[in-house]
Amino acid sequence: MQAMSEEFGRFLLTSLEVMAAVFVVALGALVLWAIVAYIVDVTQTRQAIRRNYPVIGRFRYFFEHLGEFFRQYFFAMDREELPFNRAQRSWVYRAAKNVDNTVAFGSTRDLKRTGSVLFVNCPFPTLGEDAVPPAAVTIGEGCKQPYTTPSLFNISGMSYGALSKPAVLALSEGAKKAGCWMNTGEGGLSPYHLSGGCDIVFQIGTAKFGVRDLDGNLDDGKLQEVAAHPQVRMFEIKLSQGAKPGKGGILPGVKVTEEIARIRGIRQGEDAISPNRHPDIHDFDDLLDMIERVRVVTGKPTGIKTVIGSATMLDQCFQRILERGTESAPDFITVDGAEGGTGAAPMPLIDAVGMPLGEALPLLVDKLHEYGLRDRVRVIASGKLVNPTDVAWALCAGADFITSARGFMFALGCIQALQCNKNTCPTGITTHNEKLQRGLHPPDKAQRVANYVRNMTREVGIIAHSCGVRSPRELKRSHARMVLDNGLSVPLDELFPLPEPRR
Image (cartoon, rainbow, N blue to C red; front, side, top):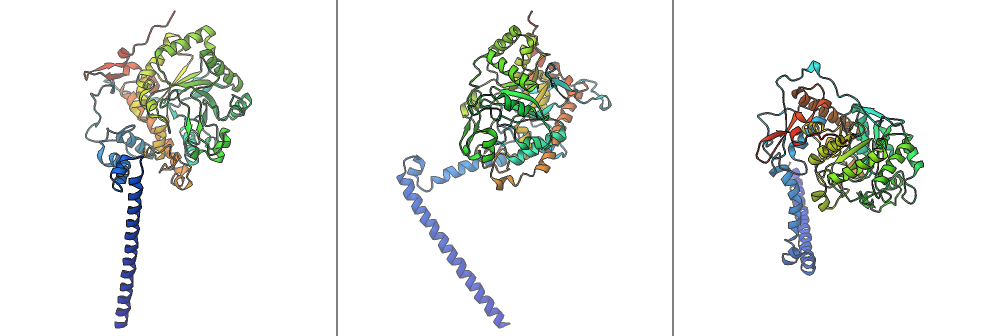
């Protein structure tokens, strides 16, 4: 027993000696680092804080970075954060997980805030047995291969490259389960878009990735190759998107892998910066010519995606359509609000360019009515529409379909870390780092995508039934009110009355 005690004592003494040695080495390394950091800080001239407060000044940048996460999890109220607050994200998370989405004790939303939308409940809501699912709507009735779908809520344009392989796989499979479409974004058609078997909208960006020749021009042969896939149901020519109107897509070189470079037709490792507009579209005649060219070559509905700057652009476009004939019109127009998202864009464009969707969507619908084109052109609304109230408002304003990108990122598990452009996304959604991608399991996330769509449609239906209509597609402007500066609300149809058609 005594021998064992002595042995244990020697072991304990040795352990303490090792720990002391490690401590001394660590302390020495820390002191050495502090000395080197001090010398570097006082001699550098780029940062005044570090030059005036060597070593200590470095912690300023560390704490500034930590502030993003502390504000999100500890200090911000449920309705305070931007671009999406905790209440918005939490609804998506619960809907995607298909868990109870009811809340207690009352709303945390400020119902008197200017711009808030309130829905007009009726005294005799629609009974469950009288409710009907959303009716199917046809896009491109005059095309060789028109597209008919009942889906209200769909996946907006997100490129493979901006998104990781597991994320695209999960979205594709989830869209198939839910019966909605998936937009490829401007990065071209990848095998992962096709893998789930969902309907696909192919987006033609300003760089024409996936359908261009070696000189960057639109290639009819490539268009036919893409259109040959039966899953590709429509083509969307992107003029601009909400977060960066007047600026092309930006994919940092660190995210341009060999495979992405091959799909897009660019060089590996180099920044993929698209032109700020289509070089071959100089006016509305050129635009209508391209729409017709793509529609004829592919035989499928062809539309445009744009941010609206003013009513003038719509007047000029629609007037030209009437002069050429209504058959020259796009089969659909996707209108993106200035609040739309992106993985990378200059702050001035994100903050201050373009018309918000709350103004742009009613304006587009009104102008289509005014020029007699509303029955010819379908309207797709995009831009920060992630919750049932957002989608129901868009339907009231006149949209035929709604698309969302960031909502589906939340369904995949996005935590709004704001690192989409850095290849360091902690949830594996917007990174090509395989270690980070490992956390995103496509089969599980695909089910969450499907749950999100189904719960969205169900809860928009709840709003519709409260308003006394049988289906979300029956919602009109008279079913919603908007709060004004004085705290009082007015009906949406009074705020945005439909104009009389031109004669």
